[in-house]
Length: 253
Image (tube, rainbow, N blue to C red; front, side, top):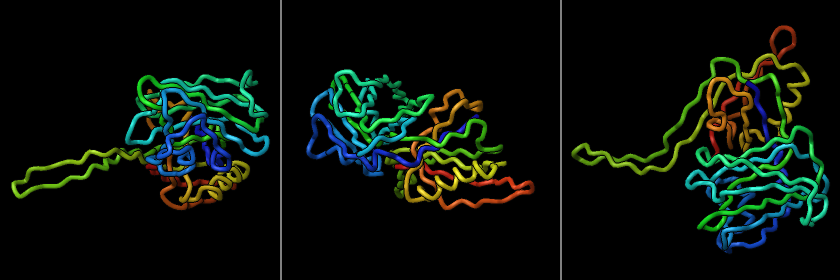
């Protein structure tokens, strides 16, 4: 298996303009790291333009749901251009929507260099809803991932109360994914990349994880997603000048 980290999110640095806004759910909510802070349109079709301010390198787009509601669209297309004009953009890519896992992801095989990105979204009955979006350049480790064993948990965040007769009452909210393990045998160049990710994110900013070529699950999107580091990781230098780093991620809520 291989692992793609996405930390430096151009969306956070961009000017966001939607074709229409619900005043109570503005497009600025997309920049809020809390997944429950969402953008909503007024109708069943909408486009959202991201202006990065200058030409930037892009190889990945990811979208995650709010974790308390489904993805709020049924079709999605990402377009890229160097001008804010969308009659015939040089890049137009239809995105595959995984409604079951609340996950959308596309990786270009080569870097794209553009200033503007536009999401074109449609729904069926309800207005468009968008939680969090990543657009930017990923850090990709083609042949490197967690070593065995890997610990994965789905923490149920339901609230339970119990009355005097022992009857239980549950407030079902959501589950929170947790992944932990070690990435071994990193050379100094790979370690530089990992340190750049840690410098940017630490445990205060989200990291998007995308598991490629997964061999231990049939559905790689089940554990790919929107995470935070649980804490600052420990790094061990082994004989031969190879590094081992222990990582623990909790799903962003």
